[in-house]
Amino acid sequence: MISKNTICLWYEDSALEAAQFYAQTFPNSAVGAILHAPGDYPSGKQGDVLTVEFTVIGVPCVGLNGGTAFKQTEAFSFQIATEDQAETDRLWNAIVGNGGQESACGWCKDKWGLSWQITPRVLLEAIADPDRAAAKRAFDAMMQMRKIDVAAIEAARRG
Image 1 (spheres, rainbow, N blue to C red):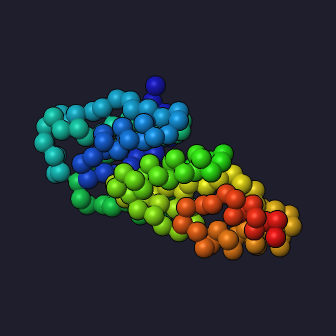
Image 2 (cartoon, one colour):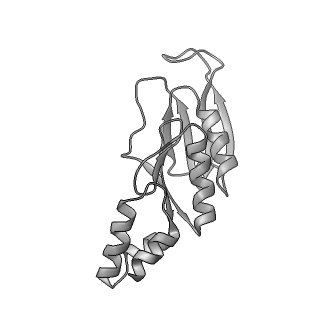
């Protein structure tokens, strides 16, 4: 069944590799149909993988092997809400440890340039705290982090 709305992600030539990594890394994720090009196209030849359908935590996506014309930017990211430090560490380390790179405030990029926000629910709750001083302390703590440290966020929130 074709989804009414699907996120299309542009890859140079490694959409299948990326989709397989996401399916192995994130729960409720899978690789679906693989479409091979029926003819030559500007960045590939007949028979090359053109598109790959996949899901990331239940979100339908398609990876397009479109060549070098466009690159991923931080203007698009997946925000993944994690339940605890162990899940945060596992996902962060999978992305960064597979050729990705760290950024700030829970953001990282995978080796294909796609941005991810690995965001513990504790952080989301802390910065939305009705006690604005507690929210600011948690926010200020987050601003000093790369990977989010759940214990440090909780400590900052408490003051």
